Image (tube, rainbow over all chains, first blue to last red):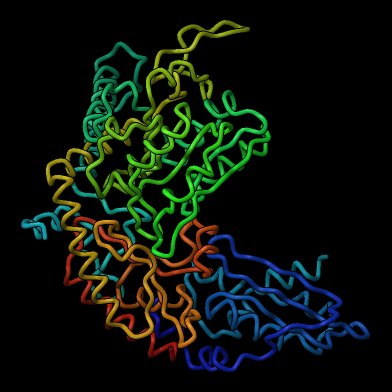
Length: 122
Length: 418
């Protein structure tokens, strides 16, 4: 993937000013995953109130794609019901990133979605 | 530099490729090397003219295939000074060779409470098989630490680490992350001085493609390497072992070709090396690997080493001129193979561009290098990082290619605002 289509302004802006990065003291739901190929790591913590996601935070370390997609994803799920959140799919993440990714970088971008799925299935 | 570098480059068809309209710079040789025409043709010729199964048929093609396969074993044996070609067991790769030793030799010889000595710089392939064995038999793993230069701190630690329970030491010849060339001959001598019957396995996956290696003079019991990192095809690797050990080891996999006589209840096993080569082997792969050995021998491994050392010195200098770039591993050139792992850090020394992002941007410039933990997660922990970018060289790389690295990294810094 040539770099110009990958590292767009919206992504770099979010990387410099991350939204929802951090942790929640008493999360109702949390999950963590490590991408075995590269060691990228995302921890997702969620607070639920009346069936709606009230608060969502992420932490971890990894490349711009894995961390920025986690940031976009937390933003997306806040205010939604668990049922609505379960419907979020890979295409939605790619739309949020606005990037066209090759197979190796796709794994980075989708790590946070996998963490979310894991969190909701527990 | 190699005098005939242009001729060598023209032997590798893939080097003519364009990536996103730019000339390919291939710096991921520690992962796998590119293949010269001589290897590609040797494999194609085998399939075109002599393909048949080995050690079975009495027909002409089967004889030719068997001759080609067994001659390949001799050519590979000569290349690494292995002595008797029967000590060369063909495997799928270095990983399978290590697993063969862990299963066939380890299960029989390592008992509860006994110890396996490894190092902090092992590739997962020379760590996980021993973890599995240790868990199964109740053995203990110990590790030779690395110092701040990324060298094994063996002189200071061996006398504590080698005990009367040490059964095996398994260590890498060259680190795939740090590039460190371990003085394996001296380390083996020191281990043996502390306990004479410790069995020693050397992982030569990153050494055989880049240094002159003479297995017989090292003093080890097992030596493993893989074909695809040394200009050969994927799917073929080598286990070398002392003959008496191979004789007494039970088979690894059971099946055809590894037997002398099979009854319903019991079988007798074939002689070495075939005892360890169950099923139809990778005949074309062995022939391709032999062609790779011939190619490297023709260039000369001493010259390959000199060429790569010069490239490494040139790259170290070029990279050290980039602000906020840290290089891991030995500073002394003679202690380092053509592997340079690095990161772009901020003022506090924290990684500022994740190596994946760096590698993606460099990919856009036509430069292929590796990013990630390089299958050495425990070592990453010791280095205090999660990942690194790695440029690794081969005999066909040039200084002009290294010249393209710096502006590409500067571009990445600009894009990522680091």
